[in-house]
Length: 71
Image 1 (spheres, rainbow, N blue to C red):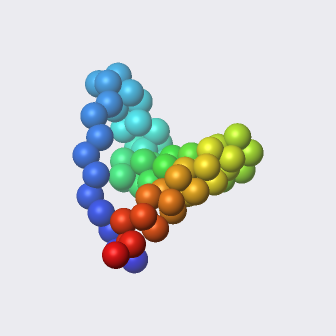
Image 2: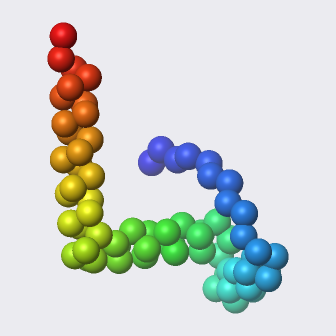
């Protein structure tokens, strides 16, 4: 699996809470973050309004890319 490093700033209190959750779960903070991101993405996939905005974005970008590809 390829990976990419991200840097995220969060409020100190939220970071402390996340560290405690990870400690109780017995996993690294990074694993808790990956789990939360995966859950968020899955929730967006199931959100009909998001899916409609996504389709509209795809169409807009498709038109731009096709125009750029013209010679």
